[in-house]
Image (cartoon, rainbow, N blue to C red):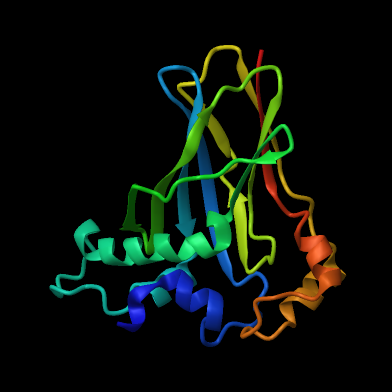
Length: 216
């Protein structure tokens, strides 16, 4: 079934009729940094709302019963395959503690909702091993280093702590704005190409949405 993965399709061949390839998909994102009952960092929970053009591409042919609605059950196969396809891109989620990359387990909780003409993907990335966050700092980055997908965090609550000890704090740093010249160069890249030249990658790799979490 060609609809098996909206990410697998969009990230490899692009969407027909798009003016440019970078960025090609726009996501409004919120990330929840989840702690367990022992006060350890245990998971990152994502909420990603996709732009209307990408949504229109992704939902074609999914209304199996023809009722004009897309139920969570109809969307679940799409959610499953696309969560699987995101593994190739590290789920666009990068967690570091004391200079070391922190590994995630595959998502076990995920679904898609369709509302207001847009798809929203919900999924939780459990840490392979929960971490105690002490006086050191954990850094969480949400972005696509190749800038095929542009992530914009929700203005009010881009990152939030869930179940964290009261001594924990979170500081959010948005990505720097692209200068007009670089944006023009990126938009001119053919939509069939995901990989960027090294000079452009040096720029797009700085476009992370970053949260620094520390606990006293």
